[in-house]
Image 1 (tube, rainbow, N blue to C red):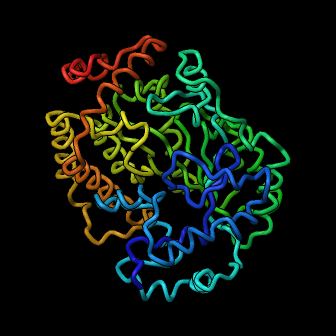
Image 2: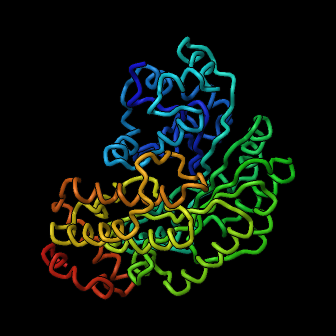
Length: 428
């Protein structure tokens, strides 16, 4: 089998439904555009899964690198556990024993069908469902596609001409079409919901109630919250499912989080975080801190890892941030990058007892939570040490900060004053 380095089983078990109703073959797909050929308005999720993924399945089996998979390739380059590795594990495939575990995979017969240009006979059991951009937050690194608040702000600033299209989840007919596919699927494994802010998105409650109505409570429910809201009704609905994977978005336990995740306040965020963690432990939920390290927060990433280690919960980031490109860690100059390296290296040294070179790729295995936290910390240390410098992005960053701060009446230098020389060099 000569496709070990590029093969992924995701197209045989997974589907992503984007906020505008388009389908994607993977939640980690790296693309600035969506495939407009397939939309829930036109065909059902089942139809797309059966016919819309044939090309990518063929590429996977032929060992062809896929442009949209660059996020996973990049993560593996710096020894960060990738989405590809996670999806392989869901089908029983382990890279260290690739050929044997692929032949033994319960999905092997489906791989064979695709290899023979036959129609596969399964439906997706692993989903990512984008509910829309309804959100009370306007993270400085976010986009209108994921935040209605930042969309409105960008319109007022003249940064965009129109708001994103209406979310599919606002259409009851399309919600029913989505539910119908789930009802027809045997052994649904995982449904992960994102927004916007999932907890305040009306469709989230509606879909949870429909899942309960049809007895689909054996599916694991995943969702991500921005740690600014609390809803007892949502919590009561979630308690009816056998497993919940709770993602909690936060960048740092430091005031810089207020700037990065505007307009949240770290004191309130910490209070809500502690409430979610207490509830999660009470209900035996799987929990991860969801973080998106940028040039402004990477210096304080150790505070996230420390909270995770102390509370025995995971840390998960989908990838190394690439868009918006001016938010990448790469644009930090050598001295500030070294500051972040030193802080993270010091924290790793203080917690080296949890380093395990044999750690599994199952980041949600409750018995190795601290080990996978260390794996993530080491991947960011590798990235900071090895990733290319991109100082040419600084003017673009400064231009953006000036625009956004004129709306918010704040300044990044109030949070990280030691970055002044760096920012002034780009015209701040």
